[in-house]
Length: 287
Ligand code: KIV
Image (cartoon, rainbow, N blue to C red; front, side, top):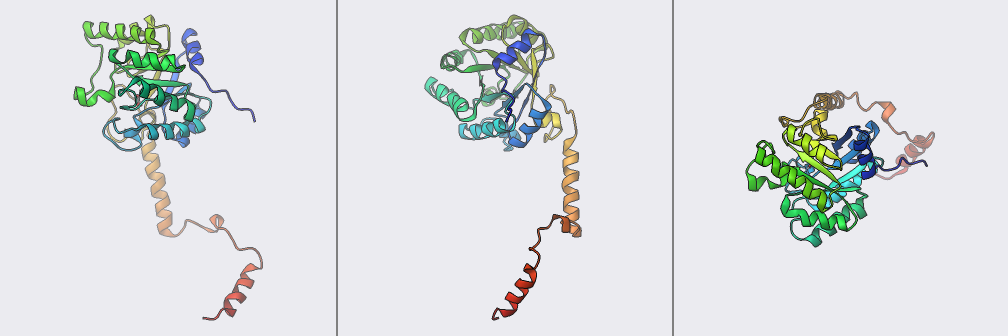
């Protein structure tokens, strides 16, 4: 069978060099991954936002390594040609360098991830270096870092003053020096995201950091219109699938209640002649 080749960091780099935008979505399950693969997105991130989108938690913090590996495997089966990025969940890399390398390696060995994403401040440059030195592609996630929610109290736009912008530009350069070969910039002022993208030799993916980055990513349930509650300022509904899904389930339930589903076309049947034999068998059975 002719299998489409899985995209890698090299494909993302080529898109940047050619000035073509990189398209990316998050995904957390096989069925949605098949659809994202059919839509031809370049990159799929199995984000720890799965803790919110799939499990209904208020933050990304409850995501565990075993859960993330399981859903990354499912997405890999559904979209084998997309560049698969796996997200290191809270406490999978903060505890030690050895934990970081071992957990990153699980995504590569057990799920076929091409790139490992790590939410990072300057305090994690050694983690970025260690994972990269171990032979893995690292995407440094800077700007808004949802795993720091309990420390910060709330998540707000980054790079909005000259000092904060300077710090972020310096941080992005330090991440590349440490070994990151792509960046994810979340919730960063557009002007600063543009500067980072211009100064950075590797692909810079924007999540809410404006149109001037090398690519864009959004949470899949947001773009499909399946999200529960209001979207962040930077996100956008491209469809209202929630209404279509509710209507479809209502129609199914109505037909079940009315007895019109299932009809005979959805039934299996006993083989010809077997009903007569069964009737005789039942008649001979002692009560
Ligand atoms: O976990 C996630 O889905 C992410 C994206 C929002 C970038 O980190």
